[in-house]
Image (tube, rainbow, N blue to C red):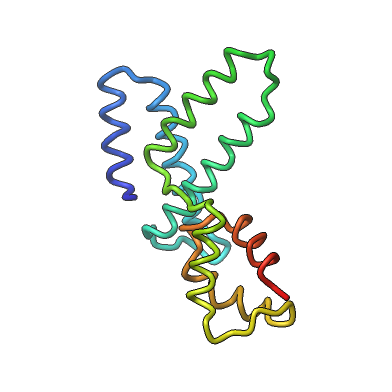
Length: 147
């Protein structure tokens, strides 16, 4: 994803009068800009930083949906509409356990799959899977693979 695309789509939504889409895009752009500010100063906004911020925003939106009482139908509908917009822009993570197992197996060919080597396995796969795979699912898969 690219920050310019988000900004152009925000302007387009403003012109079309799509207030919810404009609001969601504004929130996503803000979260990206906040992610670029670290205790050591401002960092460059890279595609990786954008993807991480969008994934975090998507998880936050999903949490809003999950915690909303079913009796609040109108609020839940708004949250679901927000999630539809977020899904247009956020990278889609792989959640299929079989696919994740194949990815991990191919990356860790030279490493013995034991509980003792879990740290080495994580160190090997993290840079390649981060932002592409739901890491909670990957962690569960690794736990099942270890002897």
